[in-house]
Length: 250
Image 1 (cartoon, one colour):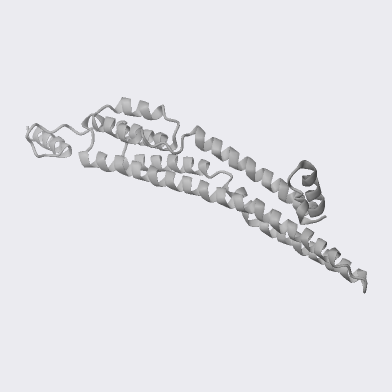
Image 2: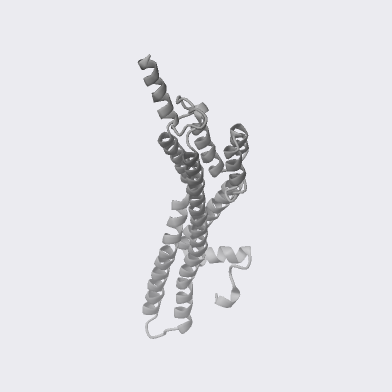
């Protein structure tokens, strides 16, 4: 068989390719199917949670600053998005009057859980991208050994076509290994960039929320501190302490 026959153009050629490549090409074929299935699974996962959607962030933060807390949390709950879920956890914690440090930690935990889910099955793609060329190279080395054994057994009656056919068949496994590895590596890098951007946007959103929350002070309705009198420069805690001192004075 010569390279001009293009064995991968039809089904019969595919079986011929498997015959020529032997078990090495069969293993690479299984790896390619597995990698393709993982890529489809991840695409479906990212589409189902609308991983690239960001339009809800600014409206939700604006509603929160305007005092429409329930509406902001409800709008985030309607979004099937990791950032929305993480921000909603932070808003619920602040609205309940919990300590800001604890709320930050809980929001970070929820965000890390979402990011971990987004990274599922990255390792198999990485393994496919790393091992496929090596497996193909192994097949090439084995094929070259077989070709030179045939050349040696032919003795003085050496047919150059025997050597050329053997070398071509041996190099076939390397080509198949690269064909399997290159898409796997490309898809893996694309998925990793998606998760990196999600992580960056998640951190940015939480920073915007907590920074503005701390800049505006604690919500008096959600904290046990007394509200200061109008025109007073006292903080809520100072006003409450002053009232206690006044009560002791009487």
